[in-house]
Length: 120
Image (cartoon, rainbow, N blue to C red; front, side, top):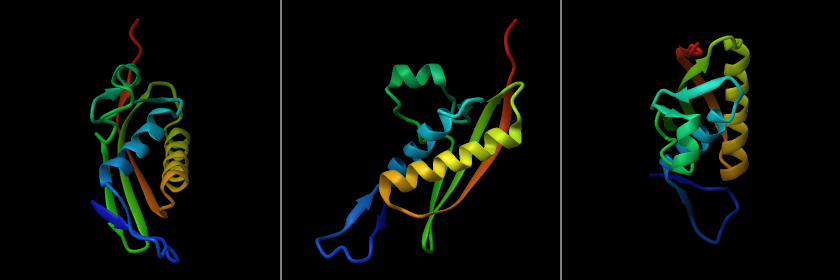
């Protein structure tokens, strides 16, 4: 569990588990149009059944100087622009983590590990 402190907070420490940050990243990524699933095998269909739990699969969080580094591995739906979808994932993951936790996101690395083909 990482310890994240905001300067000027004299009330006490705030600790956010790495899995919480990873889950935020996973939820943000899976909501981007064109993303089929995280490589941790959580598909959009399973998200509803699981109540958006276990979305840390396929996401690695590293505490770095001055913020958080995120590595996320995805499968995209065939026919989507890989660069465009990946950039949208980067933006949405960064924004979601920063808005929900107040942490600074240094980098969001996206690995496209597969393409989902439509069944005929």
